[in-house]
Image (cartoon, rainbow, N blue to C red; front, side, top):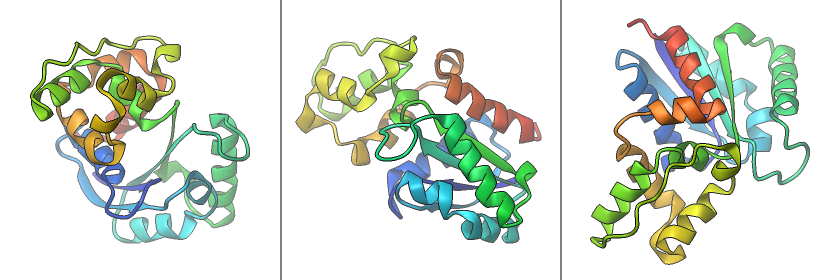
Length: 199
């Protein structure tokens, strides 16, 4: 099964690599055709049709479109509204909606990352070679809110750079079972992967 990704973030940024990495951890037989980061959420929702078409023309059976619900910036902060906007735009562009996996992350990608505290704990103990306190699991949605601030408050603002450190934290997670259990948006993402995984 060949897949591609439309994401937020900058070209060459770690965010776009993380989703491909996580997908392959969940299903090793997937083939990643490409990832196209479009910057801000507004572009993902309103200006992604042609990039999705390119990925399909390159052979993608499914295209994952992924964005953070927060921060709000402008417009609605509700996933349902975001999905309606994206669906309307893709339908108008003639994109086959059945091939698109729409993933609205609640709240941000880092929310997936902090559910299981082992990733943050292991990464920073190895990176800065200091026995930082254990970063606890975050089971409830309220505990997963403002995830960057939670990491900064734990390790110090100067020691955590989301653009440089997030991929390393993700790689320190032994699995994604706790994220699947306690974060509904990750559980939905995993469900999309399971649907198309040939294993």
